[in-house]
Image 1 (cartoon, rainbow, N blue to C red):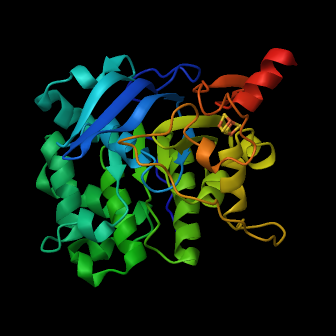
Image 2 (image 1 turned 60 degrees about the horizontal axis):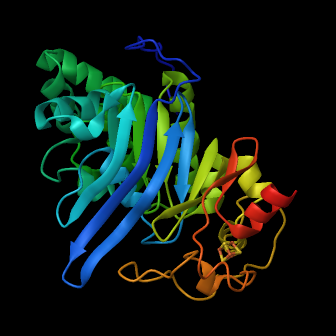
Length: 341
Ligand code: SF4
């Protein structure tokens, strides 16, 4: 169970109507022997204070690359070749390495999929939390240890486990320990890349519920990445759907669930079981995502789309268009509705 801790001081005034994070026209390429792969192609989205923004899509659609680009932990052969990433007015792509190191933990942190890979197996979890704290503050060892215990308690781990090694904890506890490290410096944004994928469904649900409570308690925002759309719909405030490196739909979760506008979103929704709700037959999406070295012309989804408009979808790339309140979709069927009523 979570303990209720006092809300930390807000580091700077935050306007709830101003984006906390703004990703504008982001382009990321992987330079491979076969050629350049445009893994993220002109992707733009904002995340607001205290918001959970989810990114979903099949493997290889670019969602994890975005997470790595935002935190600037992309390494060659991946290169950011265009766009801007702004957080609270700071241009992340222009920061030098020193500033970036501090910024990463104090203002944004990341939780990866596999806790076992994120944690050092030969260092106790308490020492790993203390390392994160002491690398960025002048807190004494004694206070950092007390803070590590407090953080373990916050994420539902007995503080007496502070001297446990990762292998002495269950999978769920290890993932909680990684979340404790991410919370250590009270960042405004936490990026969670498939944070519960390696866990069983019961533990997964429990941790997701707890993450949401922590978000409400501490007031941070989350960029939540997963291929599991049903989990995302339950957990996020707004969702962006990625396909082949592009953002094809963005909307409040409820809209994505009840009124998806892009044929890919619709098919993705039907290919996952809902956590709650009536039983229904699941239908896979025929075909597979394109090879991004030679992506299809026009709409990248057209080879798999059963409602493609002949002569248009194969030739003209659709752009995100507003289709409702905070609802955008990139599809010529939607263009037609928007333009012709
Ligand atoms: Fe299908 Fe055309 Fe819409 Fe692409 S633009 S999703 S091919 S209808």
